[in-house]
Length: 552
Image (cartoon, rainbow, N blue to C red; front, side):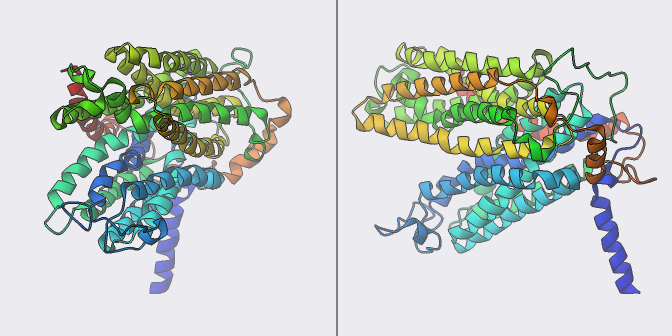
């Protein structure tokens, strides 16, 4: 009897995670879904903040100072070496793996997510992301770098991909009237995760540090436990609308009203066969390539372009004394924090604006304005106009973030909503490629310029012009995007079959059995938003405090 009871209990638990069990009933407040998405995105967004661990980890053995490995120690030897410290460049491979596996896992598992639903995908994301951090913590404890790459890099990267795309399709279906705003709210969280996680990690490392430990392993364990709570709550709070649901009083726009918004659906298996998919792929890749390289080099770029002018001293960066160098390093850190704020704010602002302007027009603004700003950056830097230079890159980073947040709604407009989450997952391979192209263009071109004797203040001039040219190419890709040909549109029967396979029709009496059955009181909505809003506000406050040094 006990075994039968256990089997029933297991079946019940699995049944609870089924997509049809998360279909919302009448009276459910759709504003409960964005905070659920934010709860997951704010946690996995810490991937952007992992650089806070590099310097402490580079002295995990030496504790007070790095203990260098013997000359000639290869990268593969560093994977398991225990008697000396890892180089920062070696640790950076974890960051690379994050985004390689984010894009690839989103592409591979996007179709499964559409069938399994956001609740199950969110829980798998939590297990991968938090479990990966625990494996990495053990890798730090045993000083085995291969465990860190496997834990956070590979397993955690898969969690990033699943967590990133888990709410996209759901939010678009809940907010057909405001697709851009809805996805902007969630994807804003991914950009904001590091604002919360980085200062929190700094505090935890300080608390856990001892004469024999740098405190990073303990910090990983603590963050994994905290993130597990928030991500589980977010995943269980996901609800999907019943097939055919639409907001009260909202009427879908007629096809003639906006030809760029499709009233039909394109199957996942056909989306990549259309030129529209690859044009949008190019739009995202080129927009991200131009921005992601700047993010990684923001601090040294400001210091090398302006040098002592940042503190009122007419001297190049190499001519400053230690105290002056420390001053401008603090100012550059403030610049990096300011860019983070615009990156995050741009995700919500531009995605919301795209609901009014249209997705194609919004990207046209990104590319035209971005081209002008990149092309003018060298002359602005040479003129010594710090305010204009900082302002230009803040605006550039707002459009970089806006590109991420706007693209899911763009896909829904072009391909319909039935498979938009899976199509978005495949499109994120553009992000993986941009993660390689952007840093390579900015970093290696800078090194080449310096090797040719170019002064550091002029080392970014050619780079900025190349990035401007990439945005021109992006503008042309965007210009060529048109509605999908009718031959790719699914018939009504095919859509009905797809919804059955995707478990979007609940069995009788099972709708919304996940917790909120028929009504969502306003107090519940307020509590849900407070749970994600308070940590986000704290992170913003920390970043503003850091950025304030720019205005002193």
